[in-house]
Image (cartoon, rainbow, N blue to C red; front, side, top):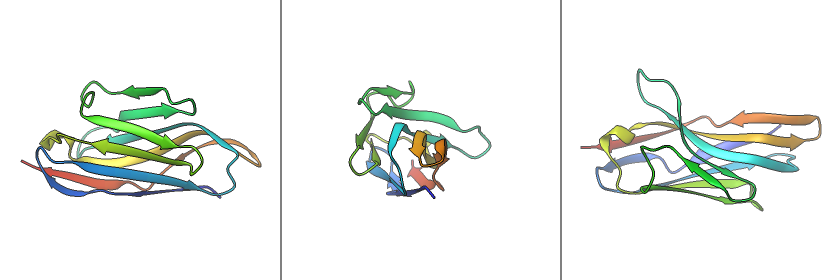
Length: 120
């Protein structure tokens, strides 16, 4: 059983910073991609940033230059450093692990979500 546990969300003023963490636990051999998605009220879930096992990163245009994704492969943990936060960054942020190799095959997993609220 693989679980993704997120932490680090909360309430912050516009212009502030937050750091999200997501740790994958279980009998994991490897993970191809880890990333963050977000969903604001009334909107569809959207990609924020992803990082491959080799360290290649991808960001949505709305967060480029403000957010940084990083990964500790040994700990199966992904981080999202969010700086210069804006009110429109308010959303539930979800961690994703894709291409997770376990005993029975390769799967995709999601965390439970963590709320980020930016006050203007």
